[in-house]
Image 1 (cartoon, rainbow, N blue to C red):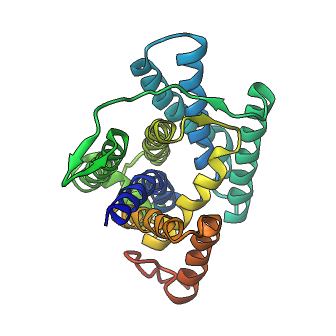
Image 2 (cartoon, rainbow, N blue to C red; image 1 turned 180 degrees about the horizontal axis):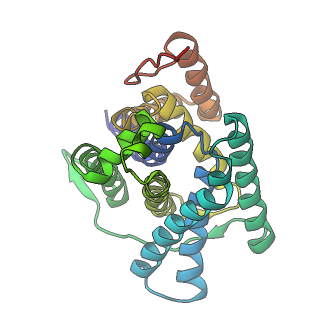
Length: 292
């Protein structure tokens, strides 16, 4: 039971990080039907910013966390304005290719600037471990799970109850009609990218606490697994992204627990194939009827 409990917590911790990234995927896709494959690399940028602030500038970890989140937020908005906004009326394939290109660009810029080797990120958040029923749970694991749940609740409130959330839903339903009703589509899309990138920044901090290294390619696999989580939960659905993230994290933990840790990445992509074959809309996704 001790091993099962430990693996469950590990799965929920990693699943929470996948969920935070998957929420960003779902938000952007829900607004402009774009699979932003550069989203995972924004996490990489956040990890390097935290490393630079703490190691090179010798500033407090709290400031490093704030600057990492701010840097990720600004980067997401800049990418949207420079790379995606000019292609808004282009075919979706053009946007997808651009997103992949931005991903490779960020990875290669990081490798050019910091080298191919991983950088050790000092502990950004520390705290006492919790003892529940004789089982020890790391402070970082508890914090990661709580932050992901709070983020989902906060975003659900934002989208359902606020004026900007209503604008986001209107743009998602019909961009042209929303524009005719006086909604600033460009500002709404930029806000969506800002929120999604801020979540990526939070994810980068939590990931660096669990795995204290920054590497140029660290975001690629994270982004792909978060994409699988978004598809599993129903891309475009924030609660679905959370459920998908937890499911992927727990699946990895189970595979590792039975001694097949080398197969855990393969299991994640096998889940993607199964979902696309049997339930393409995901757990909480809605079937979309194409207009003729």
